[in-house]
Length: 117
Image (cartoon, rainbow, N blue to C red; front, top):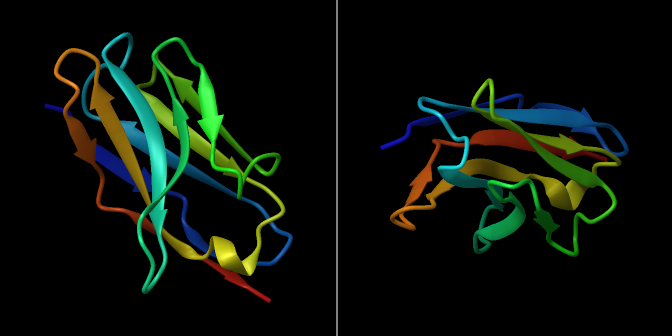
């Protein structure tokens, strides 16, 4: 079982950047696909980006070209670089890990991202 802790959220102006990080309590090398989801108030949770164990990444259409997901298997971290942020990016961002072996999902507690106009 893996525990995930997010960091890096905050308040920035539209057009700015933030970098979210997620630290896993155990090795993620070849064991967990990783990703980020977000949930804005009153809205359903949205898959933002994923990265597989062999570093193939996918993005929601709403963030393509602005967000970049990466993983560091030596440090057991996954990051989300968010550029050209928009007010509609405001949400709580959650890191998740999907076990390659069991396909079970694990979640962090989330970090708040707020974009002001």
